[in-house]
Amino acid sequence: MISLPNPFEKANVPLSVDELLDIAFRRAFGKIKSVKLYRDPLLLYRSREIARMQTIADNITSRLEKAVKSFPNIDRLDPFYRELLDVVVGIDDIRHALGALQWASKICKRIARYYIAKIRRTEDPDKMAQLRKEASGRISSVLKRISKEIDFLRINIPKLRKLPDIDLTVPVVIIAGMPNTGKSTLLSRLSTKTPEIAPYPFTTRGLIIGHSELESVGKTQFIDTPGLLDRPLSKRNRIELQAIVALRHLGGIVVYLFDPSETCGYPLSDQISLYEDLIEQFSPDIIAVVNKLDLEREFPRGFLRIREYARLKNIRLIEISADKGLGIAQLKKKIISVLTEGGDEG
Image 1 (cartoon, rainbow, N blue to C red):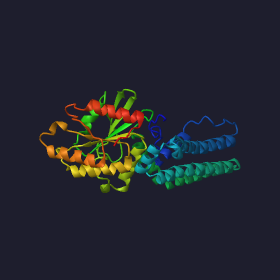
Image 2 (tube, rainbow, N blue to C red; image 1 turned 90 degrees about the vertical axis):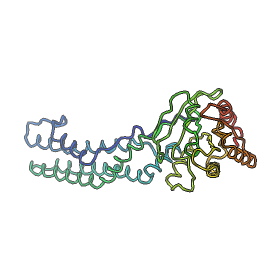
Image 3 (cartoon, rainbow, N blue to C red; image 1 turned 30 degrees about the horizontal axis):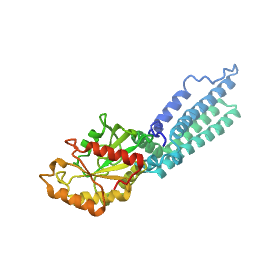
Image 4 (cartoon, helix red, strand yellow; image 1 turned 180 degrees about the vertical axis):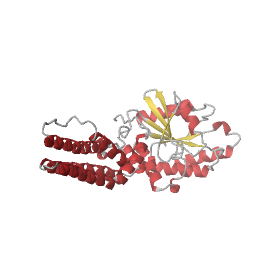
């Protein structure tokens, strides 16, 4: 596996059209080092107009190209981030926007070369200034033609830069289950440090990432996904499903929490339905865990039902109480076994 920091972290946010033009024109009419100090007034004027024209073009094209070159090669992205790129922005849309910037840079260079050549052949200072103004107007028009694409990048690149850093050099364990089944409590039990929050598409609170050192495994990432793996996939739209599919590319395993007490607010039948949905997405890498074991005396029927379901489906249950710390050691052993041996998680 390779280390996988957010590949969009260093993507350059382009300046707006007005900012690009303002900076280019201000620098063109400031002190320009490239102006040759001829004694002949005509040569001096021509040198100044050419330098202004070149400065305008260089300032604009260099910034457009910087935005394009700083964006990672889409075809070489890890599948996880490529999927997220499509979820957050849309791969076709980002290709179009970046292509528009490349096109504009090419056209601006062509305009500058054309008018600089005309200025070189002109003997009239007024005509030189007129040509430079004409070129500036054409360059401005080119930029205005791609204003929508620039605005698109200005809105969406900051979103991409906020995507989480997931280190794929270490194993990933995703904690899933319906809301209030005890996922955050379990995450805290499994983590040796305070979990951190990282933005993620279509989650209510972002990814919650904890870290721990597991025997025979080493550093391990534990990830809770509020708002994603906590309700039936049938109720998701296409984009939400794509965000879920992206998690499969992490190559980790899933710990699924059942709450047989139903104090989470969801009937056991719904919890089983979600579990079976996730089996289709992540199978066979799911460890089935019964949580809230400390409530069994109050709600015995639910615990009997989940055990019978597991027996019929040949599923090995790990029973814990994340709140009381019961069964956590056994769960860790199971996680280690799956990560190191790729054993049967069912």
